[in-house]
Length: 234
Image 1 (spheres, rainbow, N blue to C red):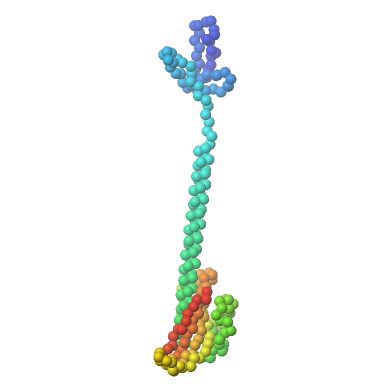
Image 2: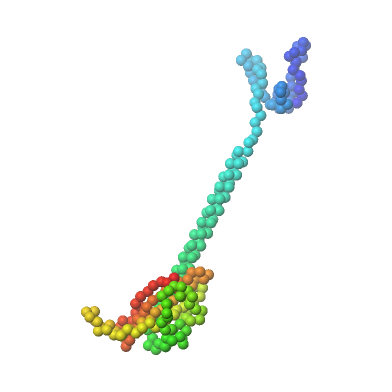
């Protein structure tokens, strides 16, 4: 802008002092070199009063900082939600695989029990894979974890979906229980008692279930054949 000097102190009162500006009136105040834009006001006497001075203002960046903080918080919440969803999905998959493995092991138990109902059972001396004599410590979970499930077993004939491998089982010949005349409950038939241990694996091999049951076979076709006990080893 074109700026004329203040002429209040001059003797020639005919000179009008004014400043031409592009979009308003600008004035340089003593003690600063900054230009400040002002609009003229009206004084109490109806004349033009002194120009209003407003100090310069600047952006401090607080809105940007707050926005970045909110964006970071929303990102962290989204990541936590995704991680929780993945964890829930993994847990559901593991639960499903374990259920399939349990069903496979139970199916192996039932197939072994159906096999024991046959009248022409082979000798339980290890000559037939999976048909063995009584083991030293078969009730231990650690024992069956170390057992050679790759060779000494009998596989389940029917294929079950969702399993990593066909279920398999081992039958031990435990003992022969002679017939008992009994008391008030009546006589009990002679029994051949067997122990069945079945294993099934589902998923990627991490879901593994081992079930065990004892099964009695009544001799001479007498009633009394059936499952005596059941437990889950793993």
